[in-house]
Length: 478
Image (cartoon, rainbow, N blue to C red; front, side, top):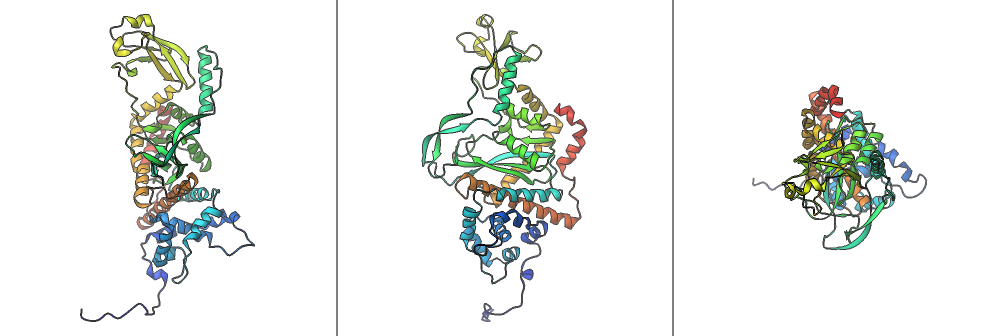
């Protein structure tokens, strides 16, 4: 205790990076499980072969970016400082102990100049997903989708009200065909004017980050946000798709396009998809079933009315296409509107002297009107599917996959806030965060497989359910 410590800072030692990095460090597991050499081929067309200064190795460049998301370092300048002193990071990047660390502007300038306007981050994400599929960590039988909000780098008080052009739903063409077919089946004339492709509406726009959207959702913070729409595979929770939108976009809007992209890009053959109540719309139920996939969607309580007698108290007869009220009166078909809803009206003569009229309708014409979507049967089918034992087990897996994925992203990978301004840059952030989560999960699963000798082919709980119920799948779906 009384001995004066001798200075060790200038003592020479024979040591290698291999000795300094712990055997169980995460970067070792990632390096053993993931092959990053494909990055060189993906970005080759963005580099000039015979002109300019020698660039930093693109594989090292992207591994630096991934390190920032893997260990939750939000600042690129701070990340470079961490690489300067962290021997594990240097080992992962194949850098020597005395090798100079690139400047932080190297990352930002490559993003702004070289990678701006390209899909290189999307392609790198896809290649990681393909590696997970090759390692049999993805089944593609159940896909769970949800969205989470990222706080935009914008003050909600710095905004203007502006008229913007909002595009209609992605499924509007199919809906228009269904409306015309339904009107023709009921002997109605076609609608005179086609529904406009776009509409102009007044909304709040940020002066700091115009690409963000002002979000007002029940139980959510109010302000300018982005939404990360993420799809996770049911086997081990590997992220198969991520897509950023402004915070005022409904969850159901981009879903079908992103689902089709996964089916085409990765050749998935899903049996079921698990979604929360925000996706419980008649068009979405119809379009998912049209793709021979069973939608397991949470129940969404309809908007309440002041009338004690509600729509659920009326019985629908599919044979006669009519509704019957609690007093036995018939509500007949009237028309189908542009939004795809059929209108059923009662006879005012029968409602005028009804003892329950004031509890049923406040109409001055003594007429009750009910609406029913042209794809309402699909919605009713999905509602019944959720209550089956098979549907309950599929939906219960959702909290263990996509919700856990978002929790891990926010807690460990800096996914609570948008690091950049602009939709394209936030999309890049979502992709890199998903890449970091995927490679971490792949590395840990590979380590467990090697340590315990476990084969991860079809051992997940959900897939055991799918296999056991698959012979009876058509019974639930058709």
